[in-house]
Length: 122
Image (tube, rainbow, N blue to C red; front, top):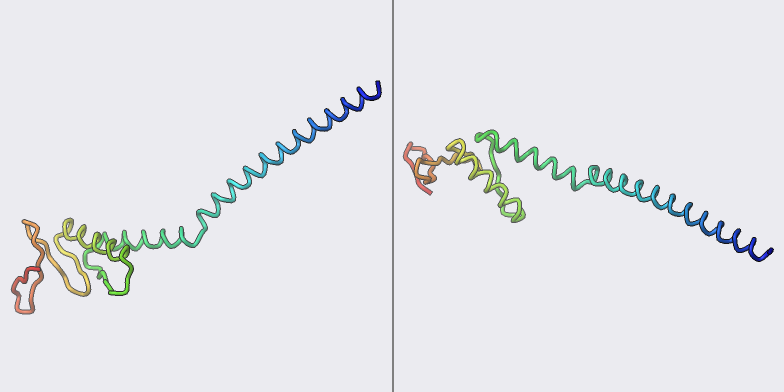
């Protein structure tokens, strides 16, 4: 009889411990998800991406803002700036890049004006 009682107590203890550990795991998992979510929005990479998106939107809205292209920039940055330049040419018909204003004609040709006022096609 005492062995049956000890087996029941042992099984009850095992069930109780399993239940408590499952509750702790669920709580830690929720905390971990919230931590990961918070970390994703406060990470330096996310902040940098948001700043670059804001700068890109600023450049897209005004064709008079200068786009500086430097030879030491990464290929990704060069492609993004070239895309912004092309979008401004198609939207506004002009875009300022490296302190030169370039224009787009009706048939898609790109040109700039010389100091004499002549069109120079690129």
